[in-house]
Length: 220
Image (cartoon, rainbow, N blue to C red):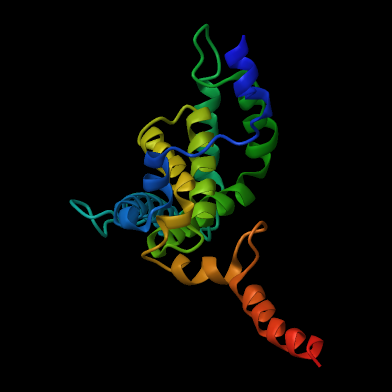
């Protein structure tokens, strides 16, 4: 009891980050690893989005450049492909061991299905933008977040495929957002934009420029 009184665990408000976590998620020396992860996840999202946009296969390998499906959008029958996907998910929502939860099936049936056209645009351009953001390392943490959000929705709709892998890698990219785009546009964007708790580089530079002026005025 005396030891507990000395330690006072309830007085601790912050637990220090382990050295391994700092190295993996905040050390620029490991940024090359997140570059590889970024390029892979971004490639998967971009090729999936371009296929929905054009109907052609953009994945490297056999079948590259071949027509594989009808475009999801700008085709005169926008939303038809998404309707088929949703109906397939609804078929998995019945039975004792349903792959799609009832609450999510209700969302698909009453929200997504009647508005399949607009949702098809959101999904298509969402995949393309997430892919580009990750490949170029632009706002990597935000791009990874929306990628994970789409992975979660696909899995809730019963589509497993590669989604668990991309979702796990996306979560890791979110944790490593400070260095995941170090070899990318984030090396410029993050210092300029900053964060709500640090401010931007521009604001700090302005503050540094005004400090000598204020000091000189005070000394007169």
